[in-house]
Length: 441
View 1 (cartoon, helix red, strand yellow):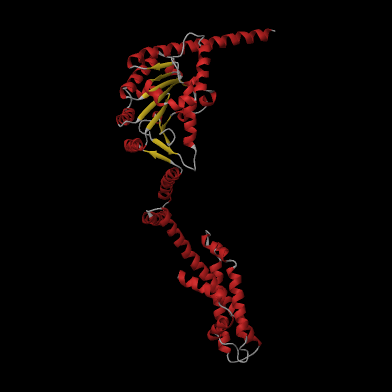
View 2: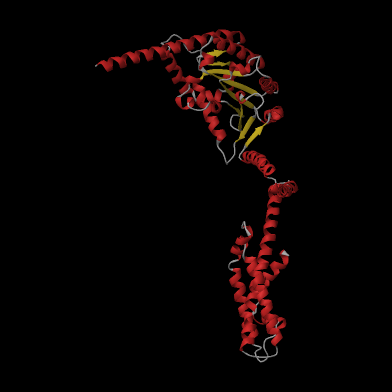
């Protein structure tokens, strides 16, 4: 049908003069004595065809309208065809008589005939053309053409089945919408991984990328030996990467309730020893020592892991609930810049790190070199706040070079934390006294 429509449209475009007049005369003979009217009829046919073709895009767009009332052009074409048939029957029944009515009827029969045929063929052509273009696009873009077509057909069948069942239709529509949102996320570079697929997905990422740099925010108990099964499994996945020769690091950001208690520091010691034995590099900082712009972010925005430094990032939060927990992986794409923002955030956290081990420091050499001015400035500022009570071990205030040093460094970190609190409370007290003095003036 598509080929017939093309040939017909091409014929009407290029045909004219004697060939068209001969065809017209063969279809419907002109009134006796007025044979030259076939040339007038030829001209009328060409003008009608050109006039209808000028609006072919508008006619084709009616195929996409949502209601029959808005798709009125085919009905008009059918009506014109019926009118043409009636007029032609009347004209032929009165032959060979010749009068003014016959002459007008002969000329008038052609416009509705050509217009109706052209409109109907335009509809057929564009309808077939849209289908072929859709199938052609699928062929170019994907190898799963048949699966996609089958899925669309099944959806259409389901929609027809549930049209009279509102409960089934609404529940099904919500489920479909949820899946579509997941598909849309995949198109934007974001993939949600269920707990059952966590190990497989993590393993694939680990095989593809050379390093894994994580930030764990306000989750210290998650990494203890008494953590939930998901925590144990997640930690073991990191251990497997180390055994494969990959670089694995974790930055621990402690919240106030974790940093300001003996239990919190004992837990930190346990977690750091666990990381050290697994070969995972670690660093420690305090959330309330981060810049204001970072502290104002939600905690889950500060909890993520970079793959290969800038290829992708993943999120695996323990406070989503043990059975609702999922991992979300986001890849860098032209349509999003989320990974680049996480890379920048990760870099700007570095100067606010107080404790690192040798593995962590060695694997961040380039970043340390880049952020060296900021690191130096932060160390100077920290020394001023501590009134010179503590001196930095190197680029960072506390650097662990051996497992036996971890306990000592954690104790020193606790003392630094206490000293910072005393210094900050003293500044606040002095400010309060100064404000009180001003108010009395």
